[in-house]
Image 1 (tube, rainbow over the protein chains, first blue to last red):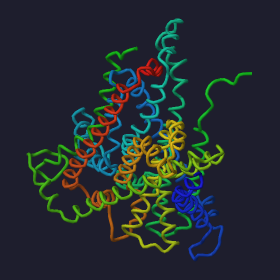
Image 2 (cartoon, rainbow over the protein chains, first blue to last red):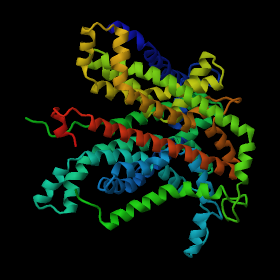
Image 3 (tube, each protein chain N blue to C red):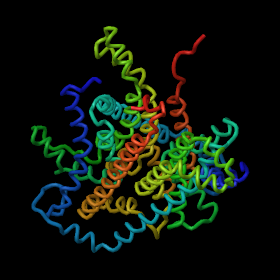
Image 4 (cartoon, chains in turn blue, red):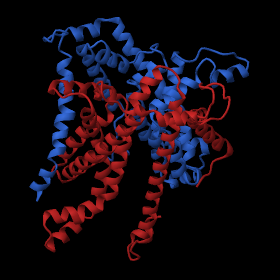
Length: 269
Length: 276
């Protein structure tokens, strides 16, 4: 019986080997290969001694950090208010619905909105600030990336707040805490698990949004993702690209470790 | 329950407007007579008719749907069997290890998946094109299917299997008559997620697509690099409507299932008092 079930799962185990373990090993292997195909440590050496690569990594990190902070700042209140609406599941669905729209199309919309004579500039002119070059700037990259990532933060935070037992809130109010204090001492600490998974869901992809840096930031922003795509598909320097891929994987595990699930409650002695 | 005051509602409305205005912008300008996304000069449907005549784009759209349907089907099959395998893995250590492997592709950035799959296909000597895209889509959709199916397996009543075996069912019958029916909602949700993952993917496809084959995302990317073309707007209107109706349909089916489950609940079951 058990043996038969194991047989059925063979395609799944094959998948793990072929598409999870093997590609990562290949990436690792490739990062030790030079342009001539021989074994070398030059890629890693170049990466860690070149100012260009290190600044790029730092910048990439900084952008991902800013995008995460911005999405959190916008999504947290929205998620909190959302849990208190009637029909909250429907409203949640409405707010995360834009994720079902192709990411390239959303990006494309911003090419129109942020262009020299687009809506954003028309509004700036109307407010008396005057038209600014918006497209192909770092700010536009932040705006569009934040826009795209908001639903991915909203969903886990909403779920975490929604799971909080209402009676906790009532107890806190009964004991004399006002709304703000209840939020700070009851709701916020209990929603941190959602914030952690939100950070995970936003920070890691933000490091690799290469299509945005190309279409919106006009190559003014180079993230790790852009650099990897460049090395693999344009300059064909796969060794260096793989090295950066490994760096990205290490950052990914770092973020996952920092945002890992903590055990709930205080240990009983 | 505490209700929102009007500032909270206002905030939600603003977020709603922020999230939807780019999409509305795209849709409105798809009807623009002038060929730009700036000044609206008059209503026209010409971009839709030129979209209908664009055979290259139509072929690509059909290819995208073909890849999505096929990859979701295969990913759902492999993922469901995998979930059953994980569920029956005896030791929890093995279970956790399998789940760990399962989640690697879910959290990996797209470029890593794309680059490593490109390496894989090159090393194996697999030609880039339809099949490499299909295989990649199957590969990155499997983990989400597992995550959708596994909770349903955990909810399943194990006594049913014991009862079935007592009554003389063989393994195949247990799988077909007991296990699969009780996890069907998870399988459907998995298929739906795998389908949307495939339709939405850009980065992975971009790496493994080669020259001869393109999906809509890749095509939109290369067209958007050349500038504004209102045909893309017309396309996005249609895609938005399709996505909207799919999601709405999915929501209502789920809601119906939920109410059905509640009304059919056994009156003697004490759970009824607990479940709202």
